[in-house]
Length: 345
Image (cartoon, one colour):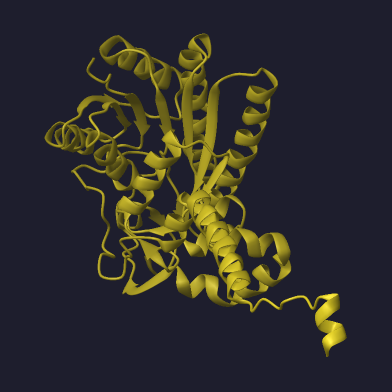
């Protein structure tokens, strides 16, 4: 029997990590519901999906509107069948000191980045719970644990997603449901968002180094959707940020006060009149990559180790046992002196 194509929903599918994730699933023949606001980017994502061997349906959706998300989910199921995997990835953000933020901008970031994830999870659960199967992937960030300067609205939204996900996971475990939810915590990524984000800084914003290509994130998302673990870290910097914050949060406060402003700003001055996508999508197909290709890493050794830690642990144990056996074989054997030989001497 031919293998059934997976039915996948990806929010924020038009660009950046979402666009790279569309490409990753399409290579495996998935049928994908493409959700985002920008129709140009969605059409580009659909072409990518079909070129790579999958299928895509374009669903212009503002995830801050729960009814729009529910309608998109229904359309996906009417077109492709029951949803197997739902990936909550859509975000908006503002680069700004808190003292220059507005209540309206905080509200908008919260509605899209946090509540958009909640709306996606609710739509996924309505599809998955009656069938008692399915995977929800929350695309998170190291900033879900460690807030940094100049991104207070985004950090707060990712913190909220982290708390929501833990609550949901506990409830699913209580109900003995086979529906799973996982969160993939990301590092700095080379995506177009740094060219369209709302910015109150004197220079153009940039991701906190080290920077990784969006394909690294996409492959991590694909792996997480098929190998359940409650949480995945992508990139050594993510592991350091999250673990360090648990051990010495005050040291993190001090360090970021010294480095966090400079590390998030490029050398180029910002255009104060540059358009942004906080309230409306920008026209055009922006693709998966931003302007940081020259410094972005195409792989993560930490992620590879994390994905293969079971095999590595087994190999290490076998190696240790083999070393012990060899060392025992190499030891000289002393003949016991018999009573007669002792008397002869």
